Image (cartoon, rainbow, N blue to C red; front, side, top):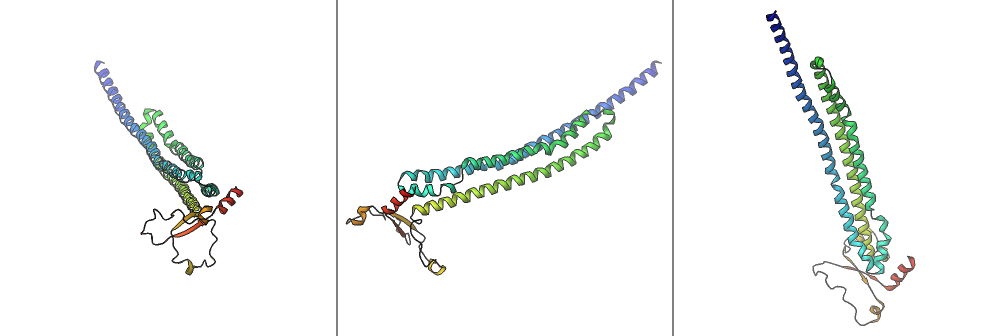
Length: 258
């Protein structure tokens, strides 16, 4: 009896030890799987943060536009008229920022759907009874890996969508900034008040001077013997210069049309 009892205990101990080793093995594998999920979440968030960094670039560009043109409104009536005329072409910082933030919110919220199936599979593996671990674990490990591959594909798609939307918004914003800046600068240089030439064809336009300046004439400039030198500060290497004369009549018309 004592020998049989000892033999029985030894067999039981070996089975318990076998199960314990398997438990440790599978627990380590579960930790590795859990780490894969966490790495996936972190990687996705990091990739989105790279796109989101463009928020500041756009904000800086809009601020630069504001600092360049808005103070010019205080200098004279012509500048005030030109900035006000094309103000609606300048992108609104709050609107641009809201659009970009909404894009990030959608991309970030998509993460939960991406990892739901892998998370459920991992939860089931943790809760499963140890006796069926071998078959169940291997089967569900394959499921998990396939689900992670699907999540990675979905993440790439969402990332590309977010990147494309950001690129479109940034391109549109920068294009609008450049267009508005051009309109305002040309207006301040008198292009909006100088009537177009009658010979606007390719042969006539070719070779025309690309450098322009606006000369705001006061009443006494038209009747006095001397006037303020408008060429002071012009670089002598400038190959040509087109001058647009703006008189007080235009300024008065601007005031009436406000």
